[in-house]
Image (cartoon, rainbow, N blue to C red):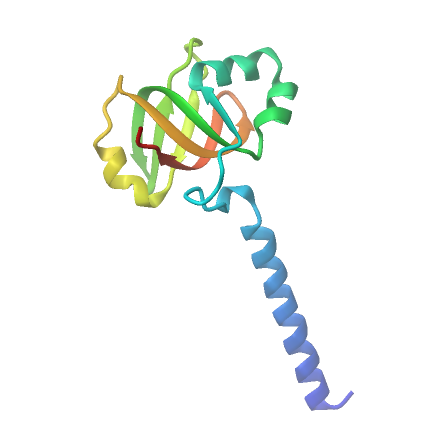
Amino acid sequence: MNKKGKIVFFAIVTVVWIFAIFYAKYRDPAYTNIDLATTELKVSSEDLVSLFLNNEKLATDTYAGKIIEIDGIVKDITFLNNRNTVLLSSKVWSSNVICDMRIDQVKIVEQLKVGQKIKIKGVCKGFLKDAVILNCKLINE
């Protein structure tokens, strides 16, 4: 292969490689446009945590990777490392719902108060000690 052919070959391989990386990254449900996406399931923060604690496999099969709406009571709000997180309470003291808020929600999150009842839409990622919801947006009722 001549020099020009090698350059063209490596350029094509590079473009395909970059496309593959972006495709893998942005097809992740966490990057779903929540504004345009249809809610698949609705649940309260208390019920979501209870479901995960009672039958984690069933809850994971039901909720993980899906766009859900969660209503609950604000337990805590954190602003750390350019991440805005709202913690929704549950009946179980040690397990809650962690809602990682979108960056465009900062002003709205700053106005929230502990004890306030809210509704959030986001992508359920699963359960560790808490239910984890990403790419969250506060929903006006």
